[in-house]
Length: 439
Image 1 (tube, rainbow, N blue to C red):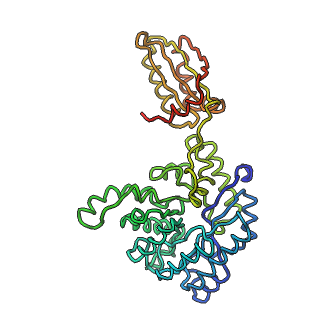
Image 2 (image 1 turned 60 degrees about the vertical axis):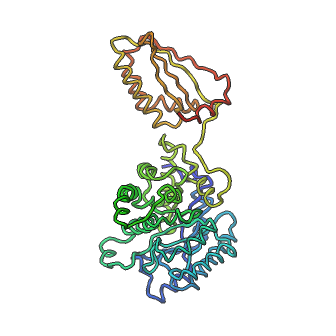
Image 3 (image 1 turned 120 degrees about the vertical axis):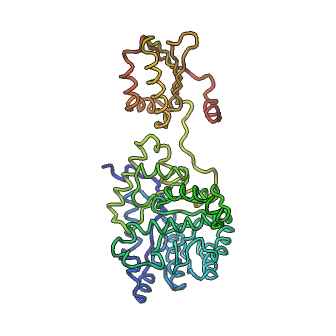
């Protein structure tokens, strides 16, 4: 296991929680400490900073934990506490302010106070408060204000309302229903076209997107049927999905990230820890594991810095160009044209091998910019392969892949001659322009 500090540099954690004494006291007075079916962990900023320092997390974004306070005063006190932590530890903390919903007018007042006076970095919204779910028409005026402020909204699941408490007894909310709650709230907003109607609002969906990679395609396929029955109106899918970002708190893995990329793009993925709900040592190991596969998985490696800090940095500051995957330096590229002559009796089989290794290399290896096999029209056994690699390291990694080794070992007896002259680009500066062009 790699030490997290060996991997982590300037990580931004968009999913961490503040739990204030006033918040806990208010829940005790209302006998609501177990509203979410799980005891609240203890929180103090010193322990949080200790974990951040040991793990390599530069900045954490604080949001108030569930359940939602019923008192506007407690909400205000929590927001002021978060603002104080941010002020006392410059650069180490940001916060998204809680709102005293379901009172929409009071929530709008708190938005203005939190953003204008406290310096909040965004707003935290629960999936529902006392049965008032995101997407409800009465929240449109709130979203109009958030859109005017171009606010970042961090979403978090709360106990569904109403709820059969036996459901919580059989399976704790955090194990399943939280994912349903998140999916339900986002689906509600999409079905009412909320994020398209209020452009500028950007919503961070927690816990690896919940069930949205499964729900979104189903919603899209059923939309025409629902519209024909006048059950939903117009839905601007592109605008709604473009407003959604996703934190990777919880059960992240390369497979989960690939599934999320079926409904979003790499610039919308963010690191999240869920501190302090998970033991610090577990979070440390989890971050190290993420760092490792974001370094070693060829298709995800270009997005490592984006996921760990660049995407969050852009999201909360919205300045400059959006992050993109690392692009190769033309000066370090390796360019060659492989000159191969194949025995005639093996030509068909060789071409199958060549096409397969070309396709897999370009699909799976970020450092393989081009592998393009060509066949001479006049002499079909003469094969030329245009090879372009981002760097010497990318080339060496390519040689070690299973698909290249399969090609190499499988075609040794088919090749009559092989020459690998390395080419020198006459105009290296044009390389990037060439590969930006679309066919």
